[in-house]
Image: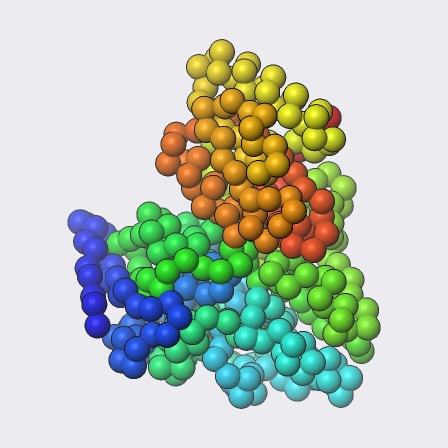
Length: 376
């Protein structure tokens, strides 16, 4: 096993294990798994983003996640498992129709980027995981490193994204090191994450219905192939966060899922989304970047490949293609971190249609911009 050590003087040591992201060898994760069993905090890759894991059953371990991230205490965590048999240890039985739907969802999307919010078995996990709710969010990640680490540790792992709270989520181990080196026990470096956006979170809303609490890697269109009825929570609906959905009461309510309440994913520069016809959008952004540069501000544009040549900001980053929004989802968080690395102070971002993965992409962009949107 190739083990490196990063030292952060006065804060502590964070170990780094380099492993194969496709087929970790037997024994490569033994040390990280042992630290998990001892109450440690370990970052590891999933098919969505890197997660920061700890034994979901141990409150002191879970509290170390909150401390490392600076995460609000009323924000629940997702529990990651490696085998559906672990569900019986964590959750209460559902009614017959609801259980049948849950089975279909798991058969179709697990392992994968779908999180199910289910009734929690009393005492099964730390109350810090559920944020005092009577439900627990559970998923089975589709990444060989994550599955092997969970299995070898023997622990259900509470694991939010492995970044400082509010920062763009990490899709590379280097992103984790930038945010959390010295604050956590270790990082399993298994290469780049896949989807690039966090999981879709759903709750079974009775009978053959699901409600989307957070859009993500599994689209509403895919869910409709399994469930008879698919609805959205107000803060997760298309247009929410773009001035078109949600209410003050929604924002004030205790979040039933991660990603429902607090600002997330933000770069250090001030960011604004620009929505409208492509010609009007590009004209507005060009005028705004020119004015900002006159003021001496370093400017950035987050553009789709089809339009990037229209811009002459200090930093123009292509997030992906409108024709293949999966590429944009994969590149979003890396692009937001690149703006920070280049010292960009003002950022303008193009928008995309909110269908398929575009819904989750716009959900994250709206949060990254603090819901600052202009229509042109």
